Image (cartoon, rainbow, N blue to C red; front, side, top):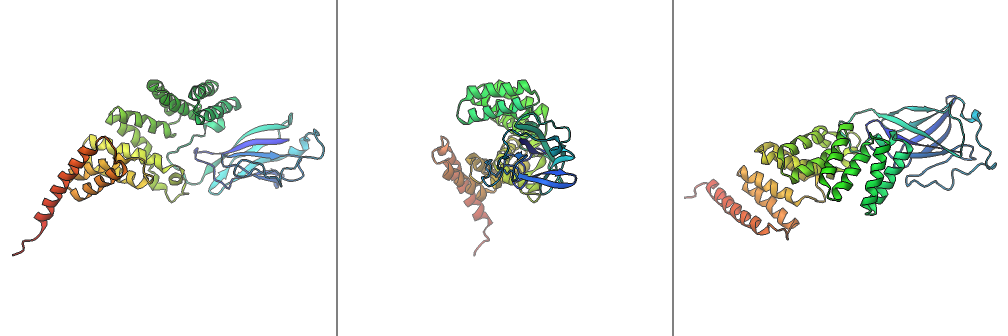
Length: 353
Protein backbone atom coordinates (compact mmCIF):
# COMPACT_ATOMS: atom_id res chain seq x y z
CA UNK A 1 0.00 0.00 0.00
CA UNK A 2 1.22 3.48 -0.85
CA UNK A 3 0.49 6.68 1.03
CA UNK A 4 0.50 9.51 -1.49
CA UNK A 5 0.73 13.16 -0.54
CA UNK A 6 2.60 16.38 -0.97
CA UNK A 7 4.60 18.87 1.03
CA UNK A 8 3.41 22.47 0.66
CA UNK A 9 4.79 25.71 2.06
CA UNK A 10 2.34 28.02 3.81
CA UNK A 11 3.41 30.97 1.63
CA UNK A 12 3.19 29.07 -1.65
CA UNK A 13 6.89 29.21 -2.52
CA UNK A 14 8.56 26.06 -3.89
CA UNK A 15 9.42 23.28 -1.49
CA UNK A 16 13.20 22.99 -0.91
CA UNK A 17 14.92 20.03 -2.52
CA UNK A 18 15.80 18.50 0.86
CA UNK A 19 12.21 17.98 2.09
CA UNK A 20 12.14 14.73 4.06
CA UNK A 21 8.83 13.10 5.01
CA UNK A 22 8.80 10.91 8.10
CA UNK A 23 6.26 8.43 9.46
CA UNK A 24 6.51 8.73 13.22
CA UNK A 25 4.84 6.14 15.48
CA UNK A 26 4.94 6.44 19.26
CA UNK A 27 7.58 9.17 18.93
CA UNK A 28 9.86 6.89 16.90
CA UNK A 29 10.70 7.39 13.24
CA UNK A 30 9.48 4.29 11.40
CA UNK A 31 10.01 5.38 7.80
CA UNK A 32 11.50 8.22 5.76
CA UNK A 33 11.06 9.31 2.14
CA UNK A 34 12.19 12.37 0.20
CA UNK A 35 9.66 14.52 -1.63
CA UNK A 36 10.18 15.18 -5.32
CA UNK A 37 11.13 18.61 -6.67
CA UNK A 38 7.40 19.27 -7.05
CA UNK A 39 6.73 18.43 -3.40
CA UNK A 40 4.99 15.09 -4.07
CA UNK A 41 5.90 12.00 -2.07
CA UNK A 42 5.02 8.31 -2.06
CA UNK A 43 5.49 6.14 1.01
CA UNK A 44 5.16 2.37 0.61
CA UNK A 45 3.83 0.65 3.71
CA UNK A 46 4.47 -3.03 4.33
CA UNK A 47 7.64 -2.88 2.27
CA UNK A 48 10.86 -4.70 3.14
CA UNK A 49 12.66 -1.38 2.74
CA UNK A 50 11.59 2.21 2.93
CA UNK A 51 10.25 3.73 -0.27
CA UNK A 52 12.06 6.65 -1.79
CA UNK A 53 11.10 9.18 -4.42
CA UNK A 54 14.13 10.90 -5.91
CA UNK A 55 14.36 14.49 -7.17
CA UNK A 56 13.27 13.54 -10.68
CA UNK A 57 10.07 11.97 -9.39
CA UNK A 58 11.19 8.40 -10.12
CA UNK A 59 11.21 5.71 -7.48
CA UNK A 60 14.76 4.62 -6.70
CA UNK A 61 15.30 0.91 -7.55
CA UNK A 62 17.05 0.06 -4.31
CA UNK A 63 14.09 1.22 -2.25
CA UNK A 64 10.38 0.50 -2.06
CA UNK A 65 10.50 -3.25 -2.66
CA UNK A 66 7.03 -4.71 -2.48
CA UNK A 67 5.73 -6.89 0.33
CA UNK A 68 6.28 -10.63 -0.16
CA UNK A 69 2.58 -11.20 0.48
CA UNK A 70 0.78 -9.66 -2.52
CA UNK A 71 -2.64 -8.23 -1.72
CA UNK A 72 -2.21 -8.82 2.00
CA UNK A 73 -3.14 -5.22 2.77
CA UNK A 74 -2.10 -3.14 5.77
CA UNK A 75 -3.29 -3.68 9.31
CA UNK A 76 -4.73 -0.78 11.28
CA UNK A 77 -2.05 -1.56 13.86
CA UNK A 78 0.51 -0.42 11.27
CA UNK A 79 -0.99 3.09 11.51
CA UNK A 80 -1.81 3.23 15.23
CA UNK A 81 -0.35 6.27 17.00
CA UNK A 82 1.33 7.30 13.74
CA UNK A 83 1.59 10.64 11.98
CA UNK A 84 3.38 12.11 8.99
CA UNK A 85 5.61 15.15 9.32
CA UNK A 86 8.19 16.89 7.15
CA UNK A 87 11.72 17.96 7.93
CA UNK A 88 12.68 21.00 5.83
CA UNK A 89 15.50 23.45 6.50
CA UNK A 90 14.15 26.82 7.63
CA UNK A 91 10.58 25.54 8.14
CA UNK A 92 8.36 24.22 10.92
CA UNK A 93 6.16 21.29 9.93
CA UNK A 94 2.52 20.54 10.42
CA UNK A 95 1.46 16.91 10.87
CA UNK A 96 -1.05 14.50 9.35
CA UNK A 97 -2.47 11.93 11.76
CA UNK A 98 -2.88 8.41 10.36
CA UNK A 99 -4.84 7.02 13.29
CA UNK A 100 -8.22 7.40 11.55
CA UNK A 101 -6.99 6.28 8.15
CA UNK A 102 -8.86 3.22 6.91
CA UNK A 103 -6.81 1.34 4.30
CA UNK A 104 -9.18 0.36 1.52
CA UNK A 105 -7.07 0.28 -1.63
CA UNK A 106 -3.49 -0.06 -2.83
CA UNK A 107 -2.95 3.71 -2.57
CA UNK A 108 -4.44 6.51 -0.49
CA UNK A 109 -4.03 10.28 -0.82
CA UNK A 110 -3.37 11.73 2.62
CA UNK A 111 -3.34 15.36 1.47
CA UNK A 112 -0.75 18.03 2.19
CA UNK A 113 1.80 18.43 4.94
CA UNK A 114 2.04 22.20 5.29
CA UNK A 115 5.38 23.61 6.42
CA UNK A 116 5.68 27.14 7.80
CA UNK A 117 8.61 29.37 6.92
CA UNK A 118 10.59 30.77 9.82
CA UNK A 119 11.12 34.04 7.86
CA UNK A 120 8.14 35.39 5.99
CA UNK A 121 8.28 36.70 2.43
CA UNK A 122 5.65 39.21 1.32
CA UNK A 123 5.03 38.15 -2.25
CA UNK A 124 5.02 34.83 -3.99
CA UNK A 125 5.14 33.47 -7.50
CA UNK A 126 3.38 30.20 -6.66
CA UNK A 127 0.09 29.66 -4.90
CA UNK A 128 -0.74 27.00 -2.34
CA UNK A 129 -4.07 26.43 -4.10
CA UNK A 130 -2.90 23.32 -6.03
CA UNK A 131 -2.24 21.58 -2.72
CA UNK A 132 -5.70 22.40 -1.38
CA UNK A 133 -7.66 21.60 -4.53
CA UNK A 134 -9.62 18.34 -4.83
CA UNK A 135 -7.92 15.52 -6.70
CA UNK A 136 -10.17 15.83 -9.78
CA UNK A 137 -9.39 19.54 -10.05
CA UNK A 138 -5.66 18.89 -9.72
CA UNK A 139 -5.82 16.24 -12.43
CA UNK A 140 -7.65 18.59 -14.79
CA UNK A 141 -5.09 21.30 -14.03
CA UNK A 142 -2.15 18.98 -14.71
CA UNK A 143 -3.72 17.84 -17.98
CA UNK A 144 -4.15 21.49 -18.88
CA UNK A 145 -0.48 22.18 -18.24
CA UNK A 146 0.50 19.22 -20.42
CA UNK A 147 -1.80 20.33 -23.23
CA UNK A 148 -0.46 23.88 -23.01
CA UNK A 149 3.14 22.65 -23.19
CA UNK A 150 2.27 20.69 -26.33
CA UNK A 151 0.60 23.70 -27.94
CA UNK A 152 -2.92 22.28 -27.71
CA UNK A 153 -4.38 25.54 -26.45
CA UNK A 154 -8.06 24.73 -27.00
CA UNK A 155 -7.70 21.51 -25.01
CA UNK A 156 -5.71 23.33 -22.32
CA UNK A 157 -8.47 25.90 -22.00
CA UNK A 158 -11.07 23.17 -21.51
CA UNK A 159 -9.00 21.44 -18.83
CA UNK A 160 -8.37 24.69 -16.93
CA UNK A 161 -12.06 25.60 -17.17
CA UNK A 162 -12.91 22.18 -15.75
CA UNK A 163 -10.42 22.71 -12.90
CA UNK A 164 -11.96 26.05 -11.84
CA UNK A 165 -15.47 24.64 -12.24
CA UNK A 166 -14.62 21.87 -9.77
CA UNK A 167 -12.67 24.19 -7.47
CA UNK A 168 -13.66 27.87 -8.01
CA UNK A 169 -10.85 29.09 -5.73
CA UNK A 170 -8.13 27.35 -7.76
CA UNK A 171 -5.85 30.37 -8.17
CA UNK A 172 -3.24 28.73 -10.37
CA UNK A 173 -5.88 27.32 -12.71
CA UNK A 174 -7.46 30.77 -13.14
CA UNK A 175 -4.03 32.19 -13.91
CA UNK A 176 -3.17 29.51 -16.46
CA UNK A 177 -6.63 29.88 -18.00
CA UNK A 178 -5.90 33.57 -18.44
CA UNK A 179 -2.54 32.81 -20.05
CA UNK A 180 -4.12 30.38 -22.53
CA UNK A 181 -6.92 32.81 -23.36
CA UNK A 182 -4.34 35.52 -23.97
CA UNK A 183 -2.47 33.21 -26.36
CA UNK A 184 -5.79 32.60 -28.12
CA UNK A 185 -6.12 36.40 -28.57
CA UNK A 186 -9.15 36.55 -26.25
CA UNK A 187 -7.87 39.50 -24.27
CA UNK A 188 -11.01 40.46 -22.36
CA UNK A 189 -11.63 36.89 -21.23
CA UNK A 190 -7.96 36.62 -20.26
CA UNK A 191 -8.19 39.82 -18.25
CA UNK A 192 -11.27 38.48 -16.47
CA UNK A 193 -9.48 35.23 -15.55
CA UNK A 194 -6.38 37.06 -14.31
CA UNK A 195 -8.51 39.45 -12.25
CA UNK A 196 -10.42 36.54 -10.75
CA UNK A 197 -7.11 35.02 -9.62
CA UNK A 198 -6.13 38.28 -7.88
CA UNK A 199 -9.43 38.45 -6.00
CA UNK A 200 -8.86 34.94 -4.64
CA UNK A 201 -5.29 35.50 -3.50
CA UNK A 202 -3.79 39.00 -3.52
CA UNK A 203 -0.37 37.61 -2.57
CA UNK A 204 -0.17 35.47 -5.71
CA UNK A 205 1.84 37.74 -8.01
CA UNK A 206 1.88 36.29 -11.59
CA UNK A 207 -1.63 37.46 -12.60
CA UNK A 208 -0.75 41.00 -11.48
CA UNK A 209 2.27 40.91 -13.77
CA UNK A 210 0.18 39.62 -16.68
CA UNK A 211 -2.37 42.36 -16.12
CA UNK A 212 0.47 44.89 -15.99
CA UNK A 213 1.72 43.60 -19.33
CA UNK A 214 -1.73 44.08 -20.86
CA UNK A 215 -1.99 47.58 -19.37
CA UNK A 216 1.48 48.38 -20.76
CA UNK A 217 0.33 47.40 -24.25
CA UNK A 218 -2.75 49.59 -23.81
CA UNK A 219 -0.55 52.47 -22.52
CA UNK A 220 -2.67 52.72 -19.36
CA UNK A 221 0.23 54.02 -17.30
CA UNK A 222 -1.65 54.61 -14.05
CA UNK A 223 -2.88 51.02 -14.11
CA UNK A 224 0.61 49.75 -14.95
CA UNK A 225 2.00 51.65 -11.97
CA UNK A 226 -0.65 50.34 -9.56
CA UNK A 227 -0.21 46.72 -10.65
CA UNK A 228 3.59 46.73 -10.64
CA UNK A 229 3.73 48.51 -7.30
CA UNK A 230 1.72 45.61 -5.89
CA UNK A 231 4.17 43.10 -7.38
CA UNK A 232 7.20 45.02 -6.17
CA UNK A 233 5.84 45.61 -2.68
CA UNK A 234 7.91 42.54 -1.72
CA UNK A 235 11.06 43.72 -3.51
CA UNK A 236 13.06 40.55 -4.38
CA UNK A 237 16.36 42.36 -3.91
CA UNK A 238 15.38 42.91 -0.31
CA UNK A 239 15.15 39.15 0.28
CA UNK A 240 18.21 38.00 -1.63
CA UNK A 241 19.89 36.86 1.58
CA UNK A 242 16.93 34.97 3.10
CA UNK A 243 17.17 31.65 1.30
CA UNK A 244 18.00 32.61 -2.26
CA UNK A 245 14.51 31.56 -3.34
CA UNK A 246 13.19 34.79 -4.78
CA UNK A 247 16.13 35.59 -7.02
CA UNK A 248 16.68 31.95 -7.96
CA UNK A 249 12.99 31.36 -8.52
CA UNK A 250 12.37 33.62 -11.49
CA UNK A 251 14.27 36.92 -11.41
CA UNK A 252 13.23 37.57 -15.02
CA UNK A 253 9.61 38.09 -13.93
CA UNK A 254 10.77 40.76 -11.52
CA UNK A 255 12.89 42.30 -14.26
CA UNK A 256 9.71 42.59 -16.30
CA UNK A 257 7.85 44.16 -13.38
CA UNK A 258 10.60 46.71 -12.81
CA UNK A 259 10.70 47.51 -16.52
CA UNK A 260 6.95 48.18 -16.69
CA UNK A 261 7.17 50.16 -13.46
CA UNK A 262 10.00 52.28 -14.85
CA UNK A 263 8.12 52.95 -18.09
CA UNK A 264 4.96 53.96 -16.21
CA UNK A 265 6.87 56.30 -13.91
CA UNK A 266 8.62 57.87 -16.89
CA UNK A 267 5.35 58.42 -18.75
CA UNK A 268 3.86 59.95 -15.59
CA UNK A 269 6.88 62.26 -15.31
CA UNK A 270 8.25 60.62 -12.16
CA UNK A 271 11.81 60.59 -13.42
CA UNK A 272 13.64 59.63 -10.21
CA UNK A 273 11.36 56.65 -9.60
CA UNK A 274 11.68 55.69 -13.26
CA UNK A 275 15.48 55.68 -12.96
CA UNK A 276 15.47 53.55 -9.81
CA UNK A 277 13.16 50.90 -11.28
CA UNK A 278 14.95 50.96 -14.62
CA UNK A 279 18.33 50.29 -13.03
CA UNK A 280 16.88 47.42 -10.97
CA UNK A 281 15.35 45.94 -14.11
CA UNK A 282 18.70 46.20 -15.85
CA UNK A 283 20.38 44.39 -12.97
CA UNK A 284 17.86 41.53 -13.06
CA UNK A 285 17.47 41.20 -16.84
CA UNK A 286 20.40 38.85 -17.21
CA UNK A 287 19.49 37.21 -20.56
CA UNK A 288 18.52 40.00 -21.58
CA UNK A 289 14.85 39.90 -22.57
CA UNK A 290 14.03 43.61 -22.79
CA UNK A 291 16.25 45.54 -25.24
CA UNK A 292 13.81 48.47 -25.04
CA UNK A 293 14.73 48.83 -21.36
CA UNK A 294 18.05 50.33 -22.42
CA UNK A 295 16.32 52.79 -24.71
CA UNK A 296 14.07 53.79 -21.83
CA UNK A 297 17.09 54.32 -19.58
CA UNK A 298 18.73 56.37 -22.32
CA UNK A 299 15.69 58.67 -22.41
CA UNK A 300 15.69 58.95 -18.62
CA UNK A 301 19.39 59.89 -18.45
CA UNK A 302 19.02 62.30 -21.36
CA UNK A 303 16.24 64.07 -19.42
CA UNK A 304 18.77 64.51 -16.63
CA UNK A 305 21.41 65.83 -19.08
CA UNK A 306 23.56 62.77 -18.42
CA UNK A 307 24.31 62.30 -22.09
CA UNK A 308 27.30 60.00 -21.61
CA UNK A 309 25.16 57.35 -19.91
CA UNK A 310 22.33 57.93 -22.39
CA UNK A 311 24.77 57.26 -25.22
CA UNK A 312 26.02 54.08 -23.55
CA UNK A 313 22.48 52.73 -23.01
CA UNK A 314 21.52 53.57 -26.60
CA UNK A 315 24.49 51.65 -27.97
CA UNK A 316 23.49 48.63 -25.87
CA UNK A 317 20.00 48.82 -27.35
CA UNK A 318 21.36 48.94 -30.91
CA UNK A 319 23.57 45.93 -30.19
CA UNK A 320 20.66 43.93 -28.79
CA UNK A 321 18.13 44.99 -31.44
CA UNK A 322 20.13 45.81 -34.61
CA UNK A 323 17.15 45.14 -36.89
CA UNK A 324 14.47 46.97 -34.90
CA UNK A 325 12.05 49.13 -36.88
CA UNK A 326 13.08 52.27 -34.99
CA UNK A 327 16.82 51.86 -35.62
CA UNK A 328 17.10 54.93 -37.85
CA UNK A 329 15.32 57.18 -35.36
CA UNK A 330 17.42 55.79 -32.52
CA UNK A 331 20.63 56.51 -34.43
CA UNK A 332 19.48 60.08 -35.03
CA UNK A 333 18.88 60.50 -31.30
CA UNK A 334 22.29 58.96 -30.58
CA UNK A 335 24.00 61.45 -32.91
CA UNK A 336 22.14 64.32 -31.21
CA UNK A 337 23.19 63.15 -27.75
CA UNK A 338 26.79 62.64 -28.87
CA UNK A 339 26.84 66.22 -30.12
CA UNK A 340 25.32 67.51 -26.88
CA UNK A 341 27.75 65.40 -24.86
CA UNK A 342 30.65 66.91 -26.82
CA UNK A 343 29.37 70.39 -26.08
CA UNK A 344 29.06 69.60 -22.39
CA UNK A 345 32.57 68.12 -22.28
CA UNK A 346 34.03 71.19 -24.00
CA UNK A 347 32.26 73.62 -21.69
CA UNK A 348 33.53 71.76 -18.64
CA UNK A 349 37.21 72.00 -19.67
CA UNK A 350 39.17 74.78 -17.92
CA UNK A 351 40.48 77.61 -20.08
CA UNK A 352 43.95 76.90 -21.34
CA UNK A 353 45.86 80.12 -22.11
